[in-house]
Amino acid sequence: MNAKSNLDYVIDQNVYVCDPVPQQTEDQNMVYPFYDHLRENRLTTTQCQDCGQIAWPPKIVCNECMSDQMEWIDFPPTGKIYAFTTQEAGVPPGFDSPLVFALIDFDNDVRLISALIDTDPAKVSVGAEVTLKVVDAPRDRVLFFFTLV
Ligand SMILES: [Zn+2]
Image (tube, rainbow, N blue to C red):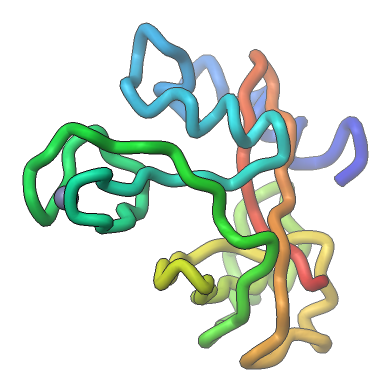
C-alpha cells in the first residue's frame, strides 16, 4: 500500500472518535508483542509450552490446559485460501471495491479470516497462496491483511 493511502486517511479522520485498533501498547495489552512482531513483518501467535496447543488469536493462558506458559511462534510465510467471498456494496472507506474476504488455512492448523488487499479479485481462487501484508497506521499502529503471492 502506498505511504499515504485512502486507508491512512480514513484512520486519520476517525482515530479520535472511534479507535479502530486499540490496545497495541504494553500498558494496554499483555499480548502487545503481537504488534511489535507485525512491525517486523512477522505474523505470530502463542503456543502452549505444556500441551502444545497453538492459540489464535494469541493468548496469555492456554484454552486447553489453563497453563500460562505461552511462547511466541511465527506463522508459516504463506497460507492457502480455504474459502472466500467478495463484498461489493458498503465496502468500508479506504478499501477498493469489491473487497475480498478469505478464510485462510496455515500449516500450523490455524484458520483465520482476513481481507485481501492489493489483490485483483478476479485472480482469487480456493487453494491460492497468500502472504502477510502489514499496513502502517497513524499513531505508530499497524494493521494486517493478506495478499496473493
Ligand atoms: Zn496448554
